[in-house]
Length: 640
Image 1 (tube, one colour):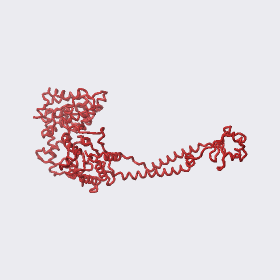
Image 2 (cartoon, one colour):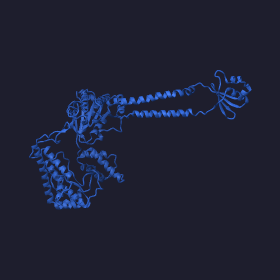
Image 3 (cartoon, rainbow, N blue to C red):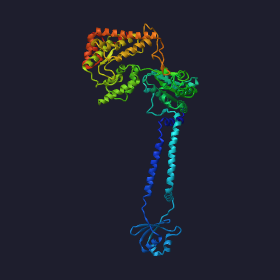
Image 4 (cartoon, rainbow, N blue to C red):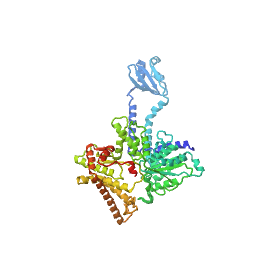
Protein backbone atom coordinates (compact mmCIF):
# COMPACT_ATOMS: atom_id res chain seq x y z
CA UNK A 1 0.00 0.00 0.00
CA UNK A 2 1.38 3.38 -1.03
CA UNK A 3 1.40 5.22 2.29
CA UNK A 4 3.65 8.02 3.49
CA UNK A 5 4.10 7.46 7.22
CA UNK A 6 6.07 10.68 7.70
CA UNK A 7 3.24 12.77 6.27
CA UNK A 8 0.73 10.85 8.34
CA UNK A 9 2.58 11.59 11.56
CA UNK A 10 2.98 15.25 10.71
CA UNK A 11 -0.68 15.60 9.81
CA UNK A 12 -1.77 13.69 12.89
CA UNK A 13 0.22 15.98 15.19
CA UNK A 14 -1.07 19.01 13.32
CA UNK A 15 -4.72 17.97 13.54
CA UNK A 16 -4.43 16.92 17.16
CA UNK A 17 -3.25 20.38 18.00
CA UNK A 18 -6.02 21.93 15.92
CA UNK A 19 -8.74 19.59 17.07
CA UNK A 20 -8.16 20.37 20.72
CA UNK A 21 -10.32 23.04 22.19
CA UNK A 22 -8.21 26.14 22.57
CA UNK A 23 -8.13 27.77 25.92
CA UNK A 24 -9.63 31.19 25.92
CA UNK A 25 -7.13 34.03 26.52
CA UNK A 26 -7.70 35.94 29.75
CA UNK A 27 -9.00 39.42 29.55
CA UNK A 28 -6.69 42.41 29.68
CA UNK A 29 -7.69 43.14 33.28
CA UNK A 30 -6.70 39.59 34.21
CA UNK A 31 -3.30 40.12 32.58
CA UNK A 32 -2.74 43.31 34.51
CA UNK A 33 -3.68 41.61 37.76
CA UNK A 34 -1.23 38.79 37.08
CA UNK A 35 1.58 41.24 36.32
CA UNK A 36 0.90 43.22 39.50
CA UNK A 37 0.94 40.04 41.61
CA UNK A 38 4.28 39.02 40.09
CA UNK A 39 5.70 42.51 40.78
CA UNK A 40 4.58 42.39 44.43
CA UNK A 41 6.09 38.92 44.89
CA UNK A 42 9.48 39.94 43.46
CA UNK A 43 9.51 43.14 45.53
CA UNK A 44 8.76 41.21 48.71
CA UNK A 45 11.55 38.72 48.01
CA UNK A 46 14.02 41.52 47.30
CA UNK A 47 13.13 43.32 50.54
CA UNK A 48 13.54 40.08 52.47
CA UNK A 49 16.97 39.44 50.97
CA UNK A 50 18.21 43.00 51.32
CA UNK A 51 16.79 43.39 54.80
CA UNK A 52 18.71 40.47 56.27
CA UNK A 53 21.90 42.58 56.80
CA UNK A 54 22.29 43.64 60.45
CA UNK A 55 23.27 47.20 61.34
CA UNK A 56 27.01 47.17 62.14
CA UNK A 57 28.95 50.04 63.79
CA UNK A 58 31.63 51.59 61.58
CA UNK A 59 34.89 52.72 63.22
CA UNK A 60 37.75 54.76 61.75
CA UNK A 61 41.01 53.08 60.80
CA UNK A 62 42.88 54.95 63.59
CA UNK A 63 40.65 53.39 66.25
CA UNK A 64 41.20 49.97 64.65
CA UNK A 65 44.99 50.55 64.96
CA UNK A 66 44.62 51.30 68.68
CA UNK A 67 42.52 48.15 69.23
CA UNK A 68 45.09 45.96 67.44
CA UNK A 69 47.90 47.46 69.53
CA UNK A 70 45.86 46.81 72.70
CA UNK A 71 45.30 43.18 71.64
CA UNK A 72 41.47 43.50 71.59
CA UNK A 73 40.97 42.27 67.98
CA UNK A 74 40.57 38.59 67.19
CA UNK A 75 39.97 38.57 63.39
CA UNK A 76 40.01 41.06 60.53
CA UNK A 77 38.26 40.07 57.26
CA UNK A 78 39.53 42.06 54.26
CA UNK A 79 37.09 42.46 51.32
CA UNK A 80 38.64 45.08 49.02
CA UNK A 81 38.41 48.36 50.90
CA UNK A 82 35.92 46.94 53.42
CA UNK A 83 37.16 45.58 56.75
CA UNK A 84 35.02 43.40 58.99
CA UNK A 85 36.43 43.39 62.56
CA UNK A 86 35.60 40.73 65.15
CA UNK A 87 36.72 41.58 68.69
CA UNK A 88 37.59 39.10 71.38
CA UNK A 89 34.33 39.93 73.17
CA UNK A 90 32.49 38.74 69.96
CA UNK A 91 31.53 42.26 69.03
CA UNK A 92 31.59 42.98 65.30
CA UNK A 93 32.40 46.30 63.60
CA UNK A 94 33.34 47.50 60.16
CA UNK A 95 35.92 49.91 58.81
CA UNK A 96 37.48 51.00 55.53
CA UNK A 97 41.02 51.34 54.20
CA UNK A 98 42.66 52.74 51.14
CA UNK A 99 42.26 50.53 48.07
CA UNK A 100 45.83 51.05 46.81
CA UNK A 101 47.66 50.03 50.05
CA UNK A 102 47.58 46.76 51.96
CA UNK A 103 46.13 46.44 55.46
CA UNK A 104 49.50 45.72 57.11
CA UNK A 105 51.06 48.79 55.53
CA UNK A 106 48.13 50.96 56.59
CA UNK A 107 48.25 49.74 60.20
CA UNK A 108 52.07 50.14 60.25
CA UNK A 109 51.60 53.77 59.18
CA UNK A 110 49.28 54.25 62.17
CA UNK A 111 51.96 52.96 64.58
CA UNK A 112 51.00 49.29 64.91
CA UNK A 113 54.11 47.23 65.59
CA UNK A 114 54.65 43.96 63.70
CA UNK A 115 54.50 41.98 66.98
CA UNK A 116 50.99 43.25 67.75
CA UNK A 117 49.86 42.66 64.18
CA UNK A 118 51.13 39.07 64.32
CA UNK A 119 48.73 38.33 67.22
CA UNK A 120 45.73 39.27 65.03
CA UNK A 121 44.20 36.78 62.52
CA UNK A 122 43.86 38.54 59.14
CA UNK A 123 41.75 36.90 56.37
CA UNK A 124 41.64 38.21 52.81
CA UNK A 125 38.56 37.34 50.70
CA UNK A 126 38.90 37.40 46.90
CA UNK A 127 36.28 39.82 45.57
CA UNK A 128 36.54 38.79 41.94
CA UNK A 129 34.19 36.28 40.20
CA UNK A 130 30.60 36.00 39.02
CA UNK A 131 29.00 36.16 42.45
CA UNK A 132 30.69 39.43 43.26
CA UNK A 133 29.41 41.12 40.15
CA UNK A 134 25.91 39.65 40.58
CA UNK A 135 25.58 40.88 44.13
CA UNK A 136 26.75 44.33 43.13
CA UNK A 137 24.73 44.65 39.95
CA UNK A 138 21.52 42.89 41.08
CA UNK A 139 20.02 45.95 42.86
CA UNK A 140 20.32 47.87 39.59
CA UNK A 141 19.38 45.08 37.14
CA UNK A 142 16.34 43.67 39.01
CA UNK A 143 14.01 46.63 38.35
CA UNK A 144 15.07 46.76 34.70
CA UNK A 145 14.45 43.01 34.24
CA UNK A 146 11.07 43.30 35.87
CA UNK A 147 10.00 46.13 33.53
CA UNK A 148 11.10 44.07 30.51
CA UNK A 149 9.18 41.02 31.79
CA UNK A 150 6.07 43.13 32.49
CA UNK A 151 5.89 44.47 28.93
CA UNK A 152 6.60 41.00 27.46
CA UNK A 153 3.79 39.46 29.49
CA UNK A 154 1.26 42.09 28.44
CA UNK A 155 2.27 41.92 24.75
CA UNK A 156 2.00 38.11 24.82
CA UNK A 157 -1.61 38.28 25.98
CA UNK A 158 -2.51 40.84 23.34
CA UNK A 159 -0.78 38.78 20.66
CA UNK A 160 -2.64 35.62 21.75
CA UNK A 161 -6.00 37.38 21.54
CA UNK A 162 -5.12 38.66 18.08
CA UNK A 163 -3.92 35.29 16.82
CA UNK A 164 -7.11 33.62 18.03
CA UNK A 165 -9.07 35.61 15.45
CA UNK A 166 -6.87 34.19 12.68
CA UNK A 167 -7.30 30.60 13.96
CA UNK A 168 -11.06 30.59 13.29
CA UNK A 169 -10.44 29.51 9.73
CA UNK A 170 -8.58 26.37 10.73
CA UNK A 171 -10.37 23.03 10.63
CA UNK A 172 -11.51 21.51 13.93
CA UNK A 173 -11.50 17.95 12.64
CA UNK A 174 -10.40 15.17 14.99
CA UNK A 175 -8.23 12.38 13.67
CA UNK A 176 -8.25 8.70 14.54
CA UNK A 177 -4.80 7.16 14.22
CA UNK A 178 -4.90 3.89 12.23
CA UNK A 179 -2.36 2.43 14.68
CA UNK A 180 -4.49 3.18 17.74
CA UNK A 181 -5.70 -0.32 18.65
CA UNK A 182 -7.83 0.86 21.57
CA UNK A 183 -10.11 2.97 19.35
CA UNK A 184 -9.90 0.83 16.22
CA UNK A 185 -13.22 -0.44 14.84
CA UNK A 186 -13.54 -3.04 12.08
CA UNK A 187 -16.41 -4.73 10.26
CA UNK A 188 -16.32 -7.51 12.89
CA UNK A 189 -17.54 -4.96 15.45
CA UNK A 190 -20.55 -4.04 13.28
CA UNK A 191 -23.34 -6.62 13.25
CA UNK A 192 -26.04 -6.65 10.57
CA UNK A 193 -25.87 -4.12 7.71
CA UNK A 194 -24.75 -6.90 5.34
CA UNK A 195 -25.53 -5.04 2.12
CA UNK A 196 -24.02 -1.80 3.43
CA UNK A 197 -20.79 -3.56 4.40
CA UNK A 198 -20.54 -5.17 0.98
CA UNK A 199 -20.83 -1.73 -0.64
CA UNK A 200 -18.18 -0.29 1.62
CA UNK A 201 -15.71 -3.15 1.16
CA UNK A 202 -14.97 -1.70 -2.28
CA UNK A 203 -13.95 1.56 -0.60
CA UNK A 204 -11.59 -0.38 1.68
CA UNK A 205 -10.14 -2.27 -1.26
CA UNK A 206 -9.49 0.96 -3.14
CA UNK A 207 -7.70 2.55 -0.19
CA UNK A 208 -5.54 -0.54 0.24
CA UNK A 209 -4.86 -1.23 -3.45
CA UNK A 210 -5.85 1.72 -5.68
CA UNK A 211 -3.60 0.58 -8.55
CA UNK A 212 -5.90 -2.35 -9.34
CA UNK A 213 -8.79 0.03 -10.04
CA UNK A 214 -6.81 2.74 -11.80
CA UNK A 215 -5.11 0.31 -14.18
CA UNK A 216 -8.44 -0.85 -15.59
CA UNK A 217 -9.77 2.69 -15.88
CA UNK A 218 -12.17 2.46 -12.96
CA UNK A 219 -12.78 5.45 -10.72
CA UNK A 220 -13.79 4.82 -7.17
CA UNK A 221 -16.67 7.00 -5.90
CA UNK A 222 -15.41 10.30 -4.51
CA UNK A 223 -18.10 10.44 -1.90
CA UNK A 224 -20.21 7.94 0.02
CA UNK A 225 -23.30 9.10 1.90
CA UNK A 226 -24.82 6.90 4.60
CA UNK A 227 -28.53 7.36 5.20
CA UNK A 228 -30.90 5.65 7.56
CA UNK A 229 -32.94 6.04 10.73
CA UNK A 230 -31.23 7.38 13.87
CA UNK A 231 -29.25 4.72 15.74
CA UNK A 232 -28.74 2.35 12.79
CA UNK A 233 -24.92 2.63 12.99
CA UNK A 234 -23.92 5.15 10.33
CA UNK A 235 -21.04 6.66 12.31
CA UNK A 236 -19.89 3.26 13.55
CA UNK A 237 -19.82 1.90 10.01
CA UNK A 238 -17.74 4.87 8.81
CA UNK A 239 -15.20 4.23 11.59
CA UNK A 240 -15.13 0.55 10.60
CA UNK A 241 -14.20 1.51 7.02
CA UNK A 242 -11.25 3.55 8.31
CA UNK A 243 -10.25 0.72 10.66
CA UNK A 244 -10.35 -1.87 7.88
CA UNK A 245 -8.38 0.31 5.48
CA UNK A 246 -5.83 1.36 8.11
CA UNK A 247 -5.83 5.01 7.06
CA UNK A 248 -6.22 8.31 8.95
CA UNK A 249 -9.83 9.10 9.73
CA UNK A 250 -10.77 12.80 9.85
CA UNK A 251 -14.16 13.18 11.49
CA UNK A 252 -16.26 16.17 12.47
CA UNK A 253 -19.87 17.32 12.53
CA UNK A 254 -21.50 19.49 9.89
CA UNK A 255 -22.29 22.13 12.51
CA UNK A 256 -18.58 22.63 13.28
CA UNK A 257 -17.96 24.43 9.99
CA UNK A 258 -20.17 27.48 10.49
CA UNK A 259 -19.72 30.14 13.17
CA UNK A 260 -20.54 33.81 13.55
CA UNK A 261 -17.72 35.06 11.30
CA UNK A 262 -18.28 35.36 7.57
CA UNK A 263 -16.12 33.01 5.51
CA UNK A 264 -15.06 30.81 8.43
CA UNK A 265 -16.92 27.73 7.15
CA UNK A 266 -15.39 27.88 3.68
CA UNK A 267 -11.93 28.43 5.16
CA UNK A 268 -12.30 25.40 7.42
CA UNK A 269 -13.39 23.28 4.46
CA UNK A 270 -10.26 24.29 2.54
CA UNK A 271 -8.04 23.57 5.53
CA UNK A 272 -9.68 20.17 6.11
CA UNK A 273 -9.25 19.00 2.54
CA UNK A 274 -5.68 20.31 2.46
CA UNK A 275 -4.75 18.22 5.52
CA UNK A 276 -6.53 15.14 4.16
CA UNK A 277 -4.67 15.38 0.84
CA UNK A 278 -1.33 15.57 2.65
CA UNK A 279 -2.24 12.48 4.69
CA UNK A 280 -3.64 10.56 1.69
CA UNK A 281 -4.86 7.87 1.53
CA UNK A 282 -7.38 9.10 4.09
CA UNK A 283 -11.08 9.31 4.88
CA UNK A 284 -13.01 12.48 5.68
CA UNK A 285 -16.21 11.81 7.58
CA UNK A 286 -18.85 14.53 8.04
CA UNK A 287 -21.57 13.53 10.48
CA UNK A 288 -25.00 15.20 10.28
CA UNK A 289 -24.14 16.81 6.96
CA UNK A 290 -27.71 18.10 6.61
CA UNK A 291 -26.64 20.93 8.98
CA UNK A 292 -24.79 22.56 6.05
CA UNK A 293 -25.97 20.53 3.04
CA UNK A 294 -29.57 21.69 2.83
CA UNK A 295 -31.01 22.83 -0.46
CA UNK A 296 -29.71 26.29 -1.33
CA UNK A 297 -31.91 29.28 -1.97
CA UNK A 298 -34.33 28.92 0.94
CA UNK A 299 -32.32 30.70 3.64
CA UNK A 300 -32.86 34.22 4.91
CA UNK A 301 -29.37 35.24 3.77
CA UNK A 302 -29.99 34.32 0.14
CA UNK A 303 -26.84 33.72 -1.89
CA UNK A 304 -24.64 35.29 0.82
CA UNK A 305 -25.77 32.93 3.55
CA UNK A 306 -22.73 31.61 5.44
CA UNK A 307 -24.09 28.06 5.40
CA UNK A 308 -24.51 28.18 1.64
CA UNK A 309 -20.97 29.50 1.17
CA UNK A 310 -19.66 26.56 3.18
CA UNK A 311 -21.67 24.14 1.03
CA UNK A 312 -20.35 25.80 -2.12
CA UNK A 313 -16.78 25.26 -0.93
CA UNK A 314 -17.46 21.57 -0.22
CA UNK A 315 -18.88 21.16 -3.72
CA UNK A 316 -15.80 22.78 -5.26
CA UNK A 317 -13.34 20.72 -3.18
CA UNK A 318 -15.05 17.42 -3.99
CA UNK A 319 -15.36 18.18 -7.69
CA UNK A 320 -11.68 19.17 -7.83
CA UNK A 321 -10.37 15.76 -6.86
CA UNK A 322 -8.11 13.90 -9.26
CA UNK A 323 -8.79 10.18 -9.92
CA UNK A 324 -5.69 9.15 -7.95
CA UNK A 325 -6.20 11.58 -5.08
CA UNK A 326 -6.89 8.67 -2.69
CA UNK A 327 -9.09 10.77 -0.41
CA UNK A 328 -12.66 9.58 0.10
CA UNK A 329 -15.37 11.72 1.66
CA UNK A 330 -18.02 9.97 3.74
CA UNK A 331 -21.08 11.61 5.23
CA UNK A 332 -24.05 10.55 7.32
CA UNK A 333 -27.55 11.92 7.67
CA UNK A 334 -31.01 10.71 8.60
CA UNK A 335 -32.64 13.38 6.41
CA UNK A 336 -31.47 12.76 2.83
CA UNK A 337 -34.59 14.44 1.44
CA UNK A 338 -33.39 17.94 2.44
CA UNK A 339 -29.93 17.71 0.84
CA UNK A 340 -28.98 19.91 -2.08
CA UNK A 341 -29.19 18.07 -5.46
CA UNK A 342 -25.69 19.26 -6.40
CA UNK A 343 -24.30 17.54 -3.32
CA UNK A 344 -25.67 14.08 -4.12
CA UNK A 345 -25.15 14.10 -7.88
CA UNK A 346 -22.69 11.67 -9.53
CA UNK A 347 -19.15 12.94 -9.12
CA UNK A 348 -19.64 14.07 -5.53
CA UNK A 349 -21.65 11.88 -3.16
CA UNK A 350 -22.36 9.46 -5.96
CA UNK A 351 -22.72 6.33 -3.85
CA UNK A 352 -25.63 6.13 -1.46
CA UNK A 353 -25.68 3.43 1.20
CA UNK A 354 -28.98 2.86 2.97
CA UNK A 355 -28.98 1.42 6.49
CA UNK A 356 -32.30 -0.17 7.44
CA UNK A 357 -33.47 -1.13 10.89
CA UNK A 358 -32.08 -4.59 11.73
CA UNK A 359 -34.24 -7.68 11.23
CA UNK A 360 -34.49 -10.50 13.78
CA UNK A 361 -31.25 -12.22 12.74
CA UNK A 362 -29.36 -8.92 12.74
CA UNK A 363 -30.78 -7.98 16.12
CA UNK A 364 -29.53 -11.25 17.59
CA UNK A 365 -26.03 -10.59 16.19
CA UNK A 366 -26.05 -7.06 17.61
CA UNK A 367 -27.14 -8.36 21.01
CA UNK A 368 -24.30 -10.89 20.96
CA UNK A 369 -21.77 -8.11 20.36
CA UNK A 370 -23.12 -5.96 23.19
CA UNK A 371 -23.20 -9.01 25.50
CA UNK A 372 -19.49 -9.84 25.13
CA UNK A 373 -18.32 -7.98 28.23
CA UNK A 374 -21.37 -8.78 30.35
CA UNK A 375 -21.60 -11.88 32.59
CA UNK A 376 -24.77 -13.62 31.42
CA UNK A 377 -26.70 -16.21 33.39
CA UNK A 378 -27.47 -19.67 32.03
CA UNK A 379 -31.10 -18.83 31.24
CA UNK A 380 -30.23 -16.03 28.78
CA UNK A 381 -31.90 -16.49 25.39
CA UNK A 382 -30.90 -13.64 23.09
CA UNK A 383 -32.94 -15.12 20.24
CA UNK A 384 -36.10 -14.56 22.27
CA UNK A 385 -35.02 -11.01 23.08
CA UNK A 386 -34.44 -10.38 19.35
CA UNK A 387 -37.95 -11.66 18.57
CA UNK A 388 -39.48 -9.32 21.14
CA UNK A 389 -37.72 -6.19 19.84
CA UNK A 390 -39.03 -5.52 16.30
CA UNK A 391 -38.33 -1.97 15.20
CA UNK A 392 -35.38 -1.57 17.58
CA UNK A 393 -32.28 0.10 16.14
CA UNK A 394 -28.72 -0.83 17.03
CA UNK A 395 -28.60 2.02 19.56
CA UNK A 396 -31.84 0.77 21.16
CA UNK A 397 -30.37 -2.73 21.50
CA UNK A 398 -27.22 -1.32 23.12
CA UNK A 399 -29.40 0.59 25.57
CA UNK A 400 -31.41 -2.57 26.23
CA UNK A 401 -28.32 -4.62 27.19
CA UNK A 402 -26.97 -1.75 29.27
CA UNK A 403 -30.27 -1.29 31.14
CA UNK A 404 -30.39 -5.04 31.80
CA UNK A 405 -26.92 -4.91 33.37
CA UNK A 406 -27.91 -1.86 35.44
CA UNK A 407 -31.01 -3.66 36.75
CA UNK A 408 -28.86 -6.65 37.77
CA UNK A 409 -26.27 -4.44 39.49
CA UNK A 410 -29.01 -2.51 41.30
CA UNK A 411 -30.15 -5.77 42.90
CA UNK A 412 -26.55 -6.75 43.83
CA UNK A 413 -26.36 -9.69 41.43
CA UNK A 414 -23.19 -10.75 39.64
CA UNK A 415 -24.90 -11.99 36.46
CA UNK A 416 -27.54 -10.68 34.07
CA UNK A 417 -30.63 -12.89 33.89
CA UNK A 418 -33.32 -13.21 31.23
CA UNK A 419 -35.95 -11.36 33.23
CA UNK A 420 -33.54 -8.39 33.49
CA UNK A 421 -33.52 -8.09 29.70
CA UNK A 422 -37.31 -8.56 29.51
CA UNK A 423 -37.78 -5.65 31.92
CA UNK A 424 -35.19 -3.64 30.02
CA UNK A 425 -37.23 -3.98 26.79
CA UNK A 426 -40.19 -2.23 28.39
CA UNK A 427 -37.96 0.39 29.99
CA UNK A 428 -36.40 1.29 26.63
CA UNK A 429 -39.77 1.31 24.84
CA UNK A 430 -41.93 3.09 27.42
CA UNK A 431 -39.69 4.42 30.17
CA UNK A 432 -39.18 3.44 33.82
CA UNK A 433 -41.93 2.23 36.09
CA UNK A 434 -43.63 4.97 38.06
CA UNK A 435 -44.24 3.05 41.28
CA UNK A 436 -45.02 6.24 43.15
CA UNK A 437 -47.93 6.90 40.76
CA UNK A 438 -50.65 5.40 42.93
CA UNK A 439 -54.13 5.08 41.44
CA UNK A 440 -57.38 5.28 43.33
CA UNK A 441 -59.69 2.27 43.23
CA UNK A 442 -61.86 3.93 40.57
CA UNK A 443 -58.88 4.97 38.40
CA UNK A 444 -57.39 1.49 38.65
CA UNK A 445 -60.66 -0.04 37.46
CA UNK A 446 -60.90 2.40 34.52
CA UNK A 447 -57.29 1.69 33.52
CA UNK A 448 -57.85 -2.07 33.75
CA UNK A 449 -60.89 -1.96 31.43
CA UNK A 450 -59.08 0.42 29.09
CA UNK A 451 -56.09 -1.93 28.63
CA UNK A 452 -58.37 -4.97 28.50
CA UNK A 453 -60.25 -3.29 25.62
CA UNK A 454 -56.99 -2.84 23.68
CA UNK A 455 -55.90 -6.41 24.28
CA UNK A 456 -59.25 -8.05 23.49
CA UNK A 457 -59.72 -6.19 20.19
CA UNK A 458 -56.18 -7.15 19.14
CA UNK A 459 -56.85 -10.81 19.98
CA UNK A 460 -60.15 -11.04 18.06
CA UNK A 461 -59.46 -9.04 14.88
CA UNK A 462 -57.74 -11.26 12.31
CA UNK A 463 -55.10 -8.80 11.05
CA UNK A 464 -53.90 -7.41 14.38
CA UNK A 465 -50.70 -8.59 16.06
CA UNK A 466 -50.97 -10.99 19.02
CA UNK A 467 -50.75 -9.66 22.58
CA UNK A 468 -47.60 -10.44 24.57
CA UNK A 469 -48.24 -8.51 27.75
CA UNK A 470 -50.89 -6.32 29.41
CA UNK A 471 -50.15 -4.10 32.41
CA UNK A 472 -51.78 -1.29 34.35
CA UNK A 473 -48.49 -0.22 35.97
CA UNK A 474 -47.60 3.29 34.84
CA UNK A 475 -44.47 3.61 32.69
CA UNK A 476 -43.18 6.89 31.32
CA UNK A 477 -46.19 8.91 30.15
CA UNK A 478 -48.44 5.86 29.89
CA UNK A 479 -50.82 4.97 32.72
CA UNK A 480 -50.83 1.37 31.43
CA UNK A 481 -49.81 -0.44 28.28
CA UNK A 482 -50.63 -3.36 26.01
CA UNK A 483 -47.61 -4.90 24.32
CA UNK A 484 -48.35 -6.59 20.99
CA UNK A 485 -45.67 -7.98 18.73
CA UNK A 486 -45.80 -9.55 15.27
CA UNK A 487 -45.05 -13.25 14.89
CA UNK A 488 -42.76 -12.60 11.95
CA UNK A 489 -40.81 -9.73 10.38
CA UNK A 490 -42.82 -7.54 8.00
CA UNK A 491 -41.53 -5.03 5.49
CA UNK A 492 -44.95 -4.18 4.03
CA UNK A 493 -48.27 -3.53 5.74
CA UNK A 494 -51.65 -3.86 4.12
CA UNK A 495 -54.75 -1.71 4.36
CA UNK A 496 -56.55 -4.40 6.39
CA UNK A 497 -53.75 -4.42 8.94
CA UNK A 498 -53.92 -0.65 9.31
CA UNK A 499 -57.72 -0.77 9.78
CA UNK A 500 -57.39 -3.40 12.53
CA UNK A 501 -54.57 -1.40 14.17
CA UNK A 502 -56.83 1.66 14.29
CA UNK A 503 -59.64 -0.41 15.85
CA UNK A 504 -57.18 -1.82 18.39
CA UNK A 505 -55.97 1.71 19.29
CA UNK A 506 -59.60 2.75 19.87
CA UNK A 507 -60.41 -0.34 21.95
CA UNK A 508 -59.61 1.44 25.23
CA UNK A 509 -61.76 4.43 24.33
CA UNK A 510 -64.71 2.18 23.44
CA UNK A 511 -64.27 0.05 26.59
CA UNK A 512 -64.38 3.10 28.88
CA UNK A 513 -67.49 4.45 27.16
CA UNK A 514 -69.21 1.04 27.19
CA UNK A 515 -68.53 0.10 30.83
CA UNK A 516 -68.65 3.47 32.60
CA UNK A 517 -70.87 5.49 30.24
CA UNK A 518 -68.24 8.23 30.19
CA UNK A 519 -64.73 8.90 28.81
CA UNK A 520 -61.58 10.20 30.48
CA UNK A 521 -58.34 11.81 29.31
CA UNK A 522 -56.70 8.38 29.23
CA UNK A 523 -57.29 7.65 25.49
CA UNK A 524 -55.76 10.96 24.32
CA UNK A 525 -52.57 9.38 22.94
CA UNK A 526 -54.59 6.51 21.42
CA UNK A 527 -56.79 8.97 19.55
CA UNK A 528 -53.74 10.82 18.28
CA UNK A 529 -52.13 7.60 17.00
CA UNK A 530 -55.35 6.47 15.30
CA UNK A 531 -55.95 9.87 13.68
CA UNK A 532 -52.39 10.16 12.35
CA UNK A 533 -52.55 6.63 10.94
CA UNK A 534 -55.89 7.28 9.26
CA UNK A 535 -54.67 10.55 7.72
CA UNK A 536 -51.52 8.83 6.43
CA UNK A 537 -53.68 6.14 4.82
CA UNK A 538 -55.61 8.83 2.95
CA UNK A 539 -52.88 11.34 2.06
CA UNK A 540 -49.73 9.21 1.70
CA UNK A 541 -50.59 5.62 0.83
CA UNK A 542 -53.67 6.03 -1.36
CA UNK A 543 -55.79 3.66 0.76
CA UNK A 544 -59.04 5.62 0.47
CA UNK A 545 -61.73 4.44 -1.96
CA UNK A 546 -63.21 7.95 -2.14
CA UNK A 547 -59.96 9.92 -2.70
CA UNK A 548 -58.26 7.23 -4.74
CA UNK A 549 -54.59 6.39 -5.28
CA UNK A 550 -53.34 9.96 -4.90
CA UNK A 551 -50.72 11.31 -2.52
CA UNK A 552 -50.90 14.80 -1.05
CA UNK A 553 -47.59 14.94 0.80
CA UNK A 554 -46.91 14.31 4.45
CA UNK A 555 -45.64 17.66 5.69
CA UNK A 556 -48.78 19.76 5.28
CA UNK A 557 -46.94 22.50 3.43
CA UNK A 558 -43.25 23.40 3.55
CA UNK A 559 -41.66 26.40 5.17
CA UNK A 560 -40.84 29.12 2.67
CA UNK A 561 -38.99 32.22 3.91
CA UNK A 562 -40.22 31.62 7.43
CA UNK A 563 -43.88 31.24 6.47
CA UNK A 564 -45.84 28.07 5.89
CA UNK A 565 -47.04 27.74 2.34
CA UNK A 566 -50.52 26.63 1.45
CA UNK A 567 -51.38 22.95 1.20
CA UNK A 568 -50.84 21.52 -2.30
CA UNK A 569 -54.56 20.81 -2.76
CA UNK A 570 -57.83 22.71 -2.81
CA UNK A 571 -60.31 23.25 0.01
CA UNK A 572 -62.69 20.79 -1.64
CA UNK A 573 -60.05 18.05 -1.49
CA UNK A 574 -59.18 19.06 2.09
CA UNK A 575 -62.84 18.59 3.05
CA UNK A 576 -62.87 15.15 1.43
CA UNK A 577 -59.66 14.18 3.29
CA UNK A 578 -61.14 15.24 6.62
CA UNK A 579 -64.33 13.35 5.83
CA UNK A 580 -62.40 10.17 4.93
CA UNK A 581 -60.31 10.38 8.10
CA UNK A 582 -63.45 10.70 10.20
CA UNK A 583 -65.03 7.75 8.37
CA UNK A 584 -62.04 5.49 8.98
CA UNK A 585 -62.01 6.45 12.69
CA UNK A 586 -65.76 5.81 13.02
CA UNK A 587 -65.42 2.44 11.29
CA UNK A 588 -62.68 1.55 13.77
CA UNK A 589 -64.94 2.50 16.69
CA UNK A 590 -67.77 0.38 15.29
CA UNK A 591 -65.42 -2.57 14.81
CA UNK A 592 -64.13 -2.26 18.39
CA UNK A 593 -67.68 -1.91 19.77
CA UNK A 594 -68.74 -5.08 17.97
CA UNK A 595 -65.81 -7.09 19.37
CA UNK A 596 -66.24 -5.85 22.94
CA UNK A 597 -70.01 -6.26 22.92
CA UNK A 598 -69.79 -9.85 21.68
CA UNK A 599 -67.01 -10.70 24.17
CA UNK A 600 -68.04 -8.63 27.17
CA UNK A 601 -67.54 -11.58 29.51
CA UNK A 602 -63.92 -11.94 28.37
CA UNK A 603 -63.45 -8.17 28.78
CA UNK A 604 -64.55 -8.31 32.40
CA UNK A 605 -62.41 -11.37 33.08
CA UNK A 606 -59.27 -9.69 31.75
CA UNK A 607 -60.00 -6.43 33.61
CA UNK A 608 -60.70 -8.17 36.94
CA UNK A 609 -57.48 -10.16 36.65
CA UNK A 610 -55.53 -6.98 35.90
CA UNK A 611 -57.01 -5.29 38.97
CA UNK A 612 -55.84 -8.28 41.00
CA UNK A 613 -52.30 -8.85 39.65
CA UNK A 614 -51.68 -5.60 37.66
CA UNK A 615 -49.65 -7.42 34.95
CA UNK A 616 -50.56 -10.31 32.66
CA UNK A 617 -47.89 -12.10 30.64
CA UNK A 618 -48.73 -13.80 27.34
CA UNK A 619 -49.22 -17.30 28.75
CA UNK A 620 -51.58 -16.21 31.53
CA UNK A 621 -53.45 -13.87 29.19
CA UNK A 622 -53.98 -16.66 26.63
CA UNK A 623 -55.47 -18.87 29.33
CA UNK A 624 -58.10 -16.22 30.12
CA UNK A 625 -59.17 -15.63 26.52
CA UNK A 626 -59.13 -19.40 25.76
CA UNK A 627 -61.48 -19.98 28.71
CA UNK A 628 -63.84 -17.46 27.11
CA UNK A 629 -63.84 -19.08 23.68
CA UNK A 630 -61.16 -16.96 21.96
CA UNK A 631 -58.25 -18.89 20.45
CA UNK A 632 -54.77 -17.30 20.56
CA UNK A 633 -53.28 -16.52 17.17
CA UNK A 634 -50.71 -18.79 15.60
CA UNK A 635 -48.16 -18.05 12.91
CA UNK A 636 -50.13 -20.05 10.33
CA UNK A 637 -53.13 -17.78 10.84
CA UNK A 638 -51.02 -14.65 10.38
CA UNK A 639 -49.53 -15.98 7.12
CA UNK A 640 -52.99 -16.88 5.84
